[in-house]
Image: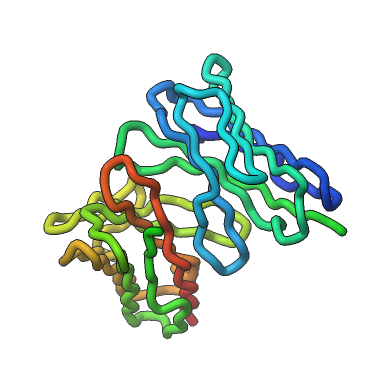
Amino acid sequence: QQQVKQSPQSLIVQKGGIPIINCAYENTAFDYFPWYQQFPGKGPALLIAIRPDVSEKKEGRFTISFNKSAKQFSLHIMDSQPGDSATYFCAAEKGGGNKLTFGTGTQLKVEL
Amino acid sequence: GAVVSQHPSWVICKSGTSVKIECRSLDFQATTMFWYRQFPKQSLMLMATSNEGSKATYEQGVEKDKFLINHASLTLSTLTVTSAHPEDSSFYICSARSQGNSPLHFGNGTRLTVT
């Protein structure tokens, strides 16, 4: 049973474009939603995270939009650069200190 | 920021041997660490939750006798793949957090190849 669904599986955008990656969850007990960036051969690195009490959070070029009623959240990357080419994972967690449930990942390629 | 160090970064071993992977929290104490496995172009699958001073909690379908986890101190957890077989070849990643609500930080992973 996949508790966090992520789309698209892959995405190609031009430099300067705004890729959007979407995630949907089923468990309403989830209360923490981070996004991770992973480069080949490396571990995931935390990008940005949000809790359900806000609808949007922005850190630098990365923005999370959160829709609690729809149980959906998305990552927007402003002014994307070739260096942003990586795999992005959304995740969800319930309670503090518990395990993360990951989405299936989105392979992003930013072309010049 | 919180740093999680994993060693080795890659290892090749022969079928039937055992391999130990270390995960250290460098600048914080971690009462809980998590071990993940990742196949190429796939997501991270949680294998087990490692608790300092107590037995690890394994996810359904993960053989506890094959993947031995020891969390002997607040800064070190180890994963030992026993009697490794080619199907155990994978990317193993550990993670840790400094306290209950703090973000989860990941190590850089260990690429295991069993020949």
